[in-house]
Image (cartoon, rainbow, N blue to C red; front, side, top):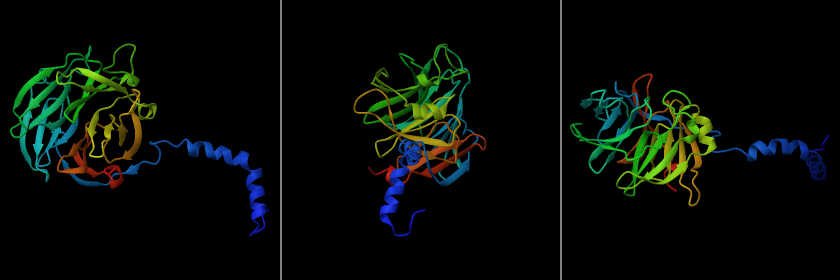
Length: 283
């Protein structure tokens, strides 16, 4: 027994217990960015029937995305406009973002294979479809498209089952930087810590934050992962995990309120706004 106030006795106890303590030190030191995620408290929420694949924000309006449909809403949930596309022409709209005064959406032929992706452009005011651009190459199923510093970044997903291709599973999912012709100029793999959490699905959403981190979401888990592009190498860095009130699918930041992250809950067909903590915005 250690006598109270005996520093020497305490030191001897610790030295003699180093083997036991080391058993606890290993998992503590090995704790990764996916452990003990911070919960993002929802600030706003409203029902949108199109909230099935993702959401985008212009700052003034919110866009809920379904496979062939888009609904435009005021921040209070009032519906402003709608796009109802032909399912043959628009089988799987995945995610959208506002860029250069256009609503730009990633689309795929999921669950069909071989993978074919297109980028669809819409008028953000009326939701009139403007044009389609077919990707020149398809290293996976196009699920997310986001823009930063004049460059496009795309997520090409792979799946273990439905929508997958032989010889590849969710571990082949990649992030690609695209040039003006939408050709991949750099490709990055996702780290094992994220792949383990999204398995057996893939990455469904991606949006650049004001802190320079890429925030990604999976298909069905209530989590968002903050990533950074490494200065060297081709594997993204998993910096932090956030617990959210939604369950995967495409996400987007509010350009007028850069800490406000929009996501969806498919079961309730709701769009949700949550705030990234200050430590995750100002770096």
